Image (cartoon, rainbow, N blue to C red; front, side, top):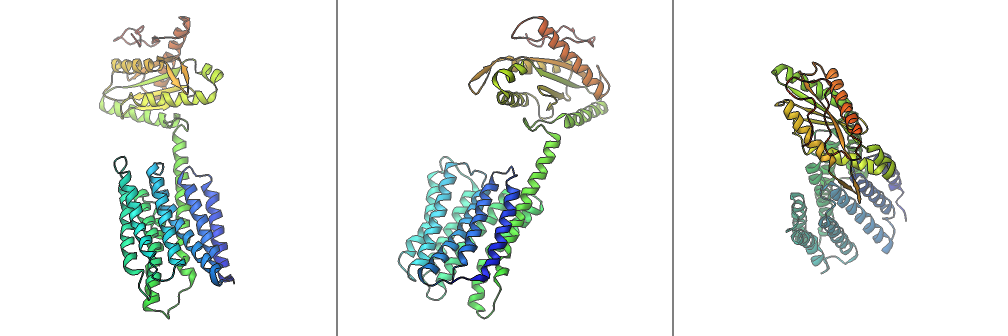
Length: 445
C-alpha cells in the first residue's frame, strides 16, 4: 500500500535538493557537501514515508527508515556547523549521536510499548555523548560541544519520564528526539553564522520553526484531536531552511568574488588594485601629518628557474611561503601586496624614515637568501629590492612606484654583474641619490 499524496512532497524536496547541489558544487565552503548529504537524507525521509501505510513489518520498516533519515539529516546539519569538524573527537561525537538516535528510534518502533529496552536506550542518548566529551576533555574543549551534551542529557531525562506513559508516551518521545535535533541545529547555526545576512537569518529562523513543529504538533494532537493541519504546513520549515542554506552559499560566493577583485587568489595578499588604493591612502595620511612613507619593491631572483626545473606547483608554494615570511616581518599597519608574478610591494607607513625602510628591506631580502625547504626540495634564491621614500623621492604614488621600480632593477643588474650564482647580500643602487645617505649602501652586512 502506497501513500500517493506524499509523491508531490518527494518531488518537491528532490528538485530543491537538485537546486542545492547545483549551487553547492561551486561553493568553497567545505560544509556544503555535508549539507547536501543531509538533504539527500531528507529525500530518503519523504520517500520512505510514501510506504508508511503498508501493513505489517514493511510499514514499520518504512516508518523507522523515514524517521531515522530525518534524524540523520538534522545530526549532519549540526555537525556541519561546528568549526572543529576535523577533530577526531568530533567524528566520535558524530558517531555517538548517530548510534544513540538510531538505536532509540529502533527500540521505539520495533519493541512493544513500555518495553524494558527503552530505559537503557534512553540512558545512552545522554550518556554516550557525555562520555565522548569527557574522554577528549584533556585535549579538546569547546562551548558548542557542551551545548550538544546538555541538549542530549536533557533529552535523555525527558525520555525516561514520558516514554512509558500509556497514552501519548511514544508520541511525545518521538517528537522530543526530533525537537532536540533541530533545536541543536538552530543553536549551532546561530553560533557559527552570527552575521547580519538574509541567508543566516532565514536558516536560523527556519531551524527554530522546524524544531517547534515537534512541540506544536503533539500538543495539538493531545488537546485538539479534531483539528487537522495539512502536512504541507508542517513541511514548510524544511523548504525555508533549504532556501536559507542556498542563500548562505550564494552570499559566500559573492563575498569570495569581492575578495578576488582586490586580492591575489594564490597568496591572499592585496593585488595591484588594492595596493594602489592603500598606497594612495598612505601618502595622503603622510601628507596631512607631515610625516614620511616608504615603498619597497622586492623581486625574487631565479624564480623562473624554480618553475622550469621543479614545476609551477613548487613555484606557487614558494610564492605562498614568501608571502607568509613577509607578513610575519612587517607591522599590521603596513601593507604587503603581490603586484606581479614574482614581485612583491610593501607600503611602510609612519613612523618611518629612510633608515627604517633600509632595515626592513635588509631583513626581508635576508629571509629570501636563506635556504628554503619546500616539499623535500631545498631552494636557494635571492631577491632584489628597490626603495623610494615619500616625499623625498617623489610627491605622488605613480612617481614613487617608478622610482622604486628603477632602483629595484638597478639592484638586479648589479647582482648579475657580480656574476655569482647565489647573492648573499644584494646591493641597493639608487639612481635617485638622497643627500642623507650613501647610494652604494648594502642591504645586508
